[in-house]
Every structure is written in C-alpha cells, then in structure tokens.
Image 1 (cartoon, rainbow, N blue to C red):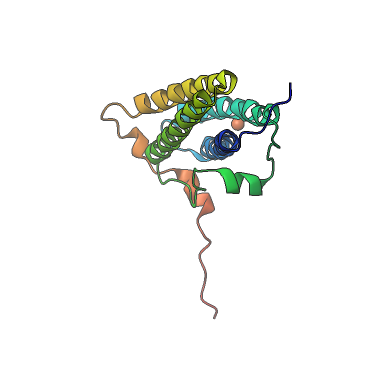
Image 2: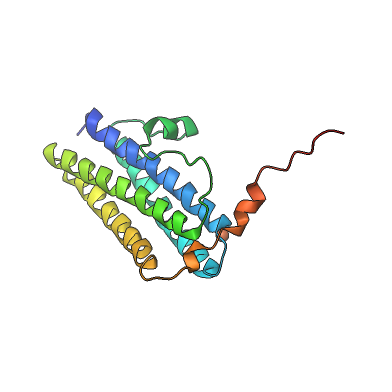
Length: 175
Ligand SMILES: [Fe+2]
C-alpha cells in the first residue's frame, strides 16, 4: 500500500526532529562547559540526557520517510523547522543551564502533544505512538532537572568558570 504524504503531520515530525537536534547540541554544550561544585553530577546527567535526546532523532526522521516525505538533514533544515531558539550565549550558572533545559523540554513536550493529537485525528496510531513514547522520555528528563533544583542549595549558583574561556579577549589600546 502506498502511503500519501500528510503535510501537517509531517511538519510536526520535522519540527520535533529539528528540536531534538537543537536540544542535543544544547546538552552537549552544557556537558562540556558546566563547572562548579556539582560538576561531576551535572556533567554526567547532561551527557546521559544528550544520548537520550539523540536517540529520538532517527525515529522522527524515519517516520517522515514512511509517510512519503523527505527527511531533512542539513543545518539549514534544522534552522527552518525548529521551534526552539538557537542559544546566543552560555548560561551564567549551572542553575540557569537547568532552567533553560527545562524550558526546552516543556516546549518539546507541548509540540509532541500537538503532534500526537494531529496523528490521532488523522487515524495514524503508529505516528501517535511514536510521539507518545518520545513525550514520556522528555517528561522524565524534565522531572530529573526539576528535582535537581529542589531545596535551598546555592551550589547551583556558582558561576560557570568555563564561561571565562569564551569571554572576548581584552583589547589593549594601541600605543
Ligand atoms: Fe563527554
């Protein structure tokens, strides 16, 4: 049986594929650049979540193929389809990193739920199930991040020392 493309449902898949690429890079960026007393835990958690997010990219792309569309793969495709904004600069503290990640997960969770609804309306349980599986993973990662922020600890507010490495070099006035 030949599947016909469903443009709107494809758009939901494209957006979430692109968002997953963005979030993967965001997690890796924080994995590399986080610093402070909680470095070890956060460094490992960010990498574990990066892997989890990375593994959602392939099924989202392949589902587009199954529905008869082309799966995007260039940076331009990601820019065109993502609803998550590109980060302009590293967060100033581990707390801000976690808050930004929670924000990204919440955006993705909403998008996946909209995709699920659309797939359901279209009578496409396979795509609906894919969205439902992935949304559970994002909900779990968001929960891990939320729990990390619990309590009065100030350990998360330490400045990320690594931000010093990306600071613009001091410009000396010419003699
Ligand atoms: Fe690493």
